[in-house]
Image 1: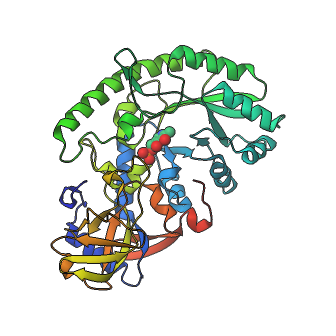
Image 2: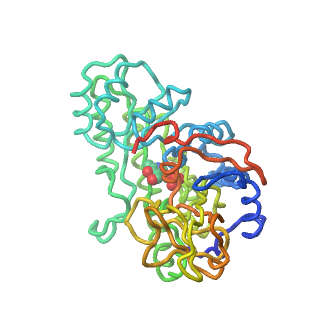
Image 3: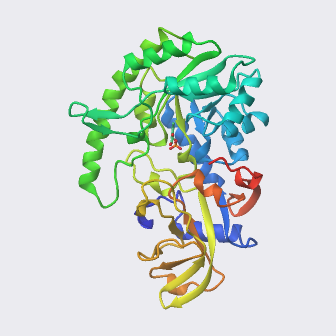
Length: 407
Ligand SMILES: Cc1ncc(COP(=O)(O)O)c(C=O)c1O
């Protein structure tokens, strides 16, 4: 787990940041979640810089707050949303968002029927198999306009004669010929319009290449990621060429916060995706080439002192999805020098924090935590307090605060 001293607090020290947040939020009663706008905007600019001129599609699952998504999409360098469910995309479209690509296949019959009943260019759905096409055709029957579709292609790295497969288990489409045959299938069907191609290299974009305390693992990871990036660059180019021969694609999407540099240099890729880098959660502390500033946090109140050197805060068990190891736990961020208890981790109703300054904390003090992932934090809070310098300048609802729970 990343140590506090290794995190970058921007121009100010952790102590200054703590005091500033305390001044800004003194009137609020924890638990609450906040976004530090200065850090958020600096992260946003850094993502645009790293994309080196290619537009960034915003991964909405990693933000889950319409006001912040609107703000980011209104800035230079960003174009369109990578949504995470079809109902979410439809909800966003109904409030003025456009260019929405649903990143994961859908089996939501009601949402599909709604999609088929509207003539809209705003939403593109994802497929990676004929089975999904058949399912959707059987659900929606006729439609007022062709359904816009994007092909999801596997961006994993296969080694040792394909016996070792590294990457997320997503699409079954791996080769240019498989992609071409699915593209032919889509194009040959009435009621479908193939407009995009996506290949997300999770093994690079979502796996930090410098895990703290594991230098040898870091070396191995970097070697695999470098081999994977060069293999993917060639394969993705061949796939795009093969599919473009069948359908005139509007976009080719790839990458994520952790892979922007290697994805954006591929000429076959027309846009990259990013989202997590805006909030700067702990899983993104472990990259060598960039370090987002922690901008999203949640504050919990100290409610008791079980013993000297231990303070216990209310709540805190906001674990991130994934393999269920320690990296998914939230991390006490401020004041500096606190850590979780190995036995208890982060609890459903209370979380002990240990460390040299835990003994100084008093009932009613706050501890600011960082989440391991980005948007999942917003499933725990109905609003985000936006902090500018040492003031709360706004409060904006999360998806949850708007009564929306998509996943
Ligand atoms: C399809 C896809 N693209 C891109 C991303 C990257 O998003 P982020 O920048 O938030 O890590 C993800 C994250 O899981 C994803 O599933």
